[in-house]
Amino acid sequence: MMSRPGIKLSRRQLLGGAASAAAVAATQGLGGLAQAAARPVRIGFSMAKTGYLGMASPVALQAYELWKAQVNEAGGLEIAGEGRRPVEFVIYDDQSEPVKAAEAYEKLISRDKVDLLLAPYGTPFHIAIGPVVERHRVPLIGNTATTTLLRDLKARYMWFTQSMPDAYARMLAGFLAAQGVKSASLLTLQLPASLETKKFVMPLLKEAGIAVPVNSEYAVSVSDMTGMLGSVKNAKPQAVVALSYPGDSVLYVNAARESGIDVPIQFLFIGPCTPFFFQKFSRPVIEGIVTLGEWAPSQARWPGAKAFFDAYSAKWGEPPDYLDSTICYASCQILQQAVATAGLDREKLRQTISSDTFQTIKGPIRYANAENVSTVPGLLQIQNGGMEIVWPKEIATAEFKPKKGWA
Image (cartoon, rainbow, N blue to C red; front, side, top):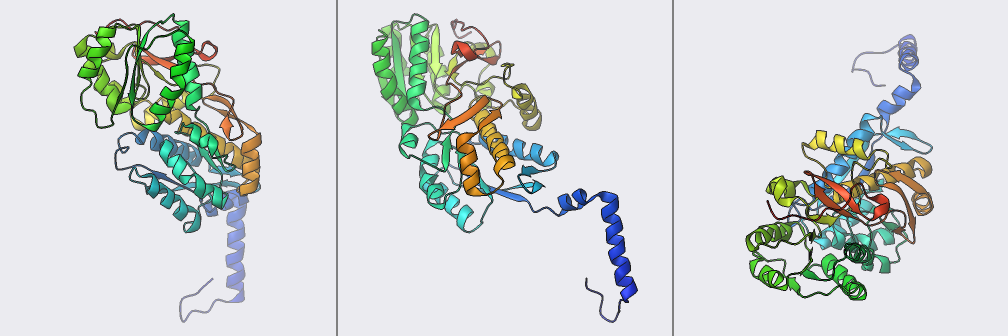
């Protein structure tokens, strides 16, 4: 305690001050004082706020921010052996460049000395930061990433929550076969996740007896898909499989409407479950489109699924992305449960994440060899202005309905 210059405090005054502090502690409770004085748990990550992913990444960042707000409103993050501490984020803009993401995580660990890490947005960024977290031995639960290259990393400190491209390929081929499809035209964006899924799905389609009359690839710079879809229309397939991303998914819908691509199964890889896709088109136009995703708020077996949907919608004024928002929020839930068990000790955290089963809005999640072995990849379909899981049957919330035109 310091007094103002020229003023002496007597022993009685000092003792009186101590007594006052004790009285406050008795009134508020020691827990209240400890909570007020608790240091924040600093959690670091990079996010593509600018660059080509700048328009896509908010669905991930908003999921993180919702989780942080909920944890802090509940009194803070429960840490084994410490009690609750408020959560504080340390965020870098990686500018949609994987190299900058790697630099950011090096800073977060070495300079900022954050307590915990969350994942960046996108597959290339997970690959870029992998060596950083492995070298420093800092646990990180991945989310928006799918490539068998992640499996090849043989990571010990990074876990991959999203399914791998070979699993998506098996799921997609199985769905087409179950619908009795005998011919499917394939359009592939030249980005790693799309190309890798194509590599795995082609032999599976052949094995299932499904012909591929059109097999076209297109560049990220594509601005019009009308010419490509002319070939698709002439081939008269029963299904169109576009291994697309959000921007070219919009291009596909516009060109398919103009070209009159009227087939009962229209699959777009990534994009239709994002809020901006629903803002871009009227609901009747996109009704019946099928896309990647294995989560829906209507799945009653997953505690918290509907509550997450409602909380996200209330906070951000739009529904969550059924793929990226949900998997990012689930990764936060896993981290939260692991810290409650193991505390902030990195080796104890690694052991806990590697061995425990975690309850999430996507159902129970458990890892083996860094991969999620509990949840299954699936397909969503736009139905009645919302989204329902239509494949596989064990997690489906609705039956698949053939698409009927473009309204």
